[in-house]
Length: 87
Image 1 (tube, helix red, strand yellow):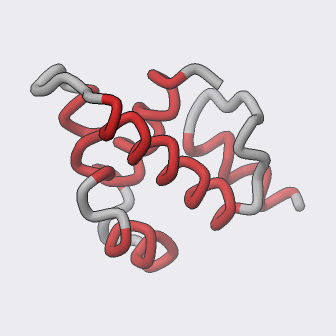
Image 2 (cartoon, rainbow, N blue to C red):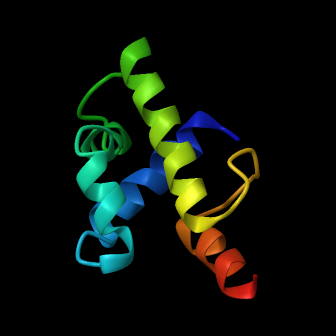
């Protein structure tokens, strides 16, 4: 999946689901990479190879939490969540 789309989805989790108990663990554990994703989306920073690795690791954790394929192609967080609801 496109790195930029992963960043968008992680940013969406950070910005729109911060009060959602379902995401509390990942938001707590990934307290650097989630805000990094949000900053990248708005163009407030650039990414280094270390940051890329952090984003990729967080992506896998999110996919594991949602029980979806980390190599799948998703349009949005809602798409990923609907796959969980269907499963």
